[in-house]
Length: 307
Image (cartoon, rainbow, N blue to C red; front, side, top):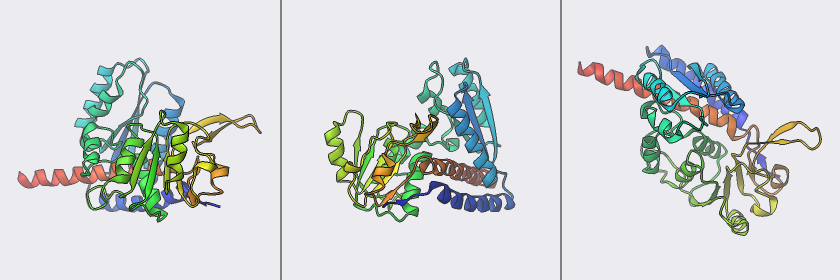
């Protein structure tokens, strides 16, 4: 029976440490780190995600604000707001909750957030720096998976890993983070990584997964990864979030992309949904916000020294 990777417990431990770091940072005379989130429209899931992020801010001592814009907001109006936040020295981090309405280009918006305030890590500059194994902001979900693997002492060096999914905000940066050299800036994981996606034939997907020491799945398809696809003792990280009807109660429930009850019988480690990667993703956003605040303070100190 697999050991459960409890993201709630692990993220809470890290939040306590972040709370101490924030207090030390502020007590040293620096401004309180601040995160501003922007929601465009009234997507219920986005409201929940942002509410969780604001709650986490309060836990770790980061001030926060949520700016809500109507679904009719134009791309130009959103870009204007982002520009104002970029220029506001009191704002450490800026995130625009995705998805945005169809009249707004998501990539344009992600690139508009100043790289030094891009705590989501979605700006093309931060993505490029990750690909080149350079210092920058790593997207929160890939960073969450990396942190969980490290916390649970899952060996990755030279091991076979399969990332199921190829999204630009989660799976692709995760694959980069898992295969890059641990000696460089991102402190990556040195695994041998295979990426599978919607056009990978099911038989081939099963073959790749059975060879993997680590499987990370993020596609949004309930029950995609089954018991027969998992090598005994493998680590399975489930990033999927799917809302389905509970056959017993008739109520909605959240599940991942893994057949949890079956796969846990053969895996060595497994993350649940909910309570696995989700809480850690929010915590890594807090980590990135504090990192942004520290960098801003260092830059301000350098500028004052030159005056």
